Image (cartoon, rainbow, N blue to C red; front, side):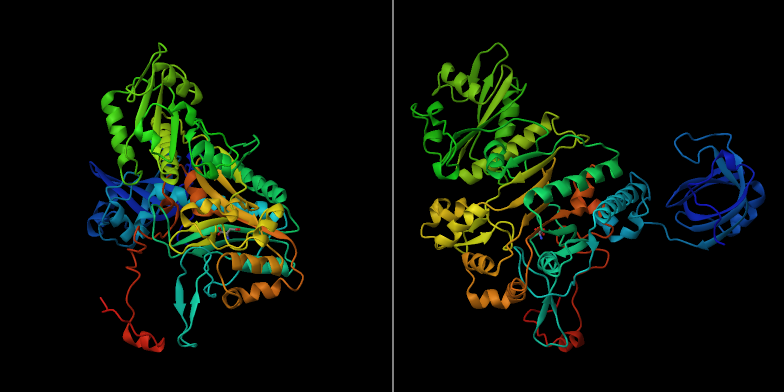
Length: 610
Ligand code: ASP
């Protein structure tokens, strides 16, 4: 037997027991004629005491960091207790030991505050995974996995696997493809999600499906994305939107309770997509704080139901605002005394290419009620006060205003709001705020292709009373500059996103389940009949054999873990992640394959092999 106990197990009550432990050498400390060794395994650290009598053997077989060591010894009370270690009251008086395997010196220290940089840690990820900090993250991941599984199992969901080698049927991103040796010249694709399979399972009558499953998307890696990631993927039959929201509110609350011990008893807020964009400039707002946008000016067709407040800024000949399509403002609480220098820095911040604004206008609403602004020359104090009031500002607040084109300005004000929220400490890591964003537009306009694309995916159902608009109107876009005026821009979907602290953690929709409507949808997306048959003939066919009404959702499992673990990076929660260029630096993949393999696949490269 290699061990009788783990390195995290023994306590004072075990005093006197003869035990065998096995693990990795964390540290060796010489103390006069005796040696102390910290032995580590997945469960913890136990101190070993090598008495003088073992020095001869130790000289012959010196121990080093990360050696795999087995010891037999007796549990005894420590004179110098360590209250920070669960095993800190005891140590093992070693009777005999055996080195099971030696280790070369690791390239970085296996400690919480390691000296290894990112690249080095990724290259030696198997060593990085020994560190407590990473281990805790993977334990949390497993806890989330377990909680989701338990909840779904309790609610009659069935875990069904779906294939990874499928047909290229893009869902929005680019597919990864796999050449087929047995079918020369043909390719499989890796699924961007099991979307069509889970819908087919509904047609087959498995009315509650789930899978914790890998998805593959060949995207340009924006910050903190992985080409392969994991979803908690779910689908249900005979449901309406409300049933799904209810079921998955239950799941997320269950996960909070099981994993974090948090009773999330409050009602999960709901917000329409339009309100999210109007008030926060963003479809995944962080509602842990307010700082809602004041919409002073915007193109009327973007928010047809909303009121324009350009009366507050018009008529003084201020070119910047007069010539802008959109002018938006936020009031930052308690910041009227921001120094000139900090305002200049903030102006530089909004001018960075990532934010892309030309400048920043400010109004200080001083604590004494007076107002001072960078646009004093144009606006009287009374006008400034009106703007401040409309922005819901109070004395002591700082009003920040941005002007430019609609899309860019709205995005910029959203980022500015998040940044100011962070600077003001309003985005507390320990506070969790869930939100449903509902009523998304069904379509999005793809400028490069001058056609409509599905905002969620092509299987999402329009709101029942918007189906007619889709059927009645031709999707052709005559005036690309004002695509938002096209009737399709106003069609809303039965789609929903779950947002946690400003992150989209899940999204789904009620699906189209009639062949005719699905065909119309493909047509609206610019597909010919032949194309839709070639790509989705199997689904259209299935819809003719009694498809039940159905809908579903998928949660971004990695992201959910990262947020619950208080980290910004999903990589920390994946055992073997890729780096920002999509490379596995440990395997050094992707890599070339040899000519024989290429020949077998009937593939000729038209680039030089590196
Ligand atoms: N398949 C969708 C996605 O990956 C989720 C869903 O609609 O259930 O985003």
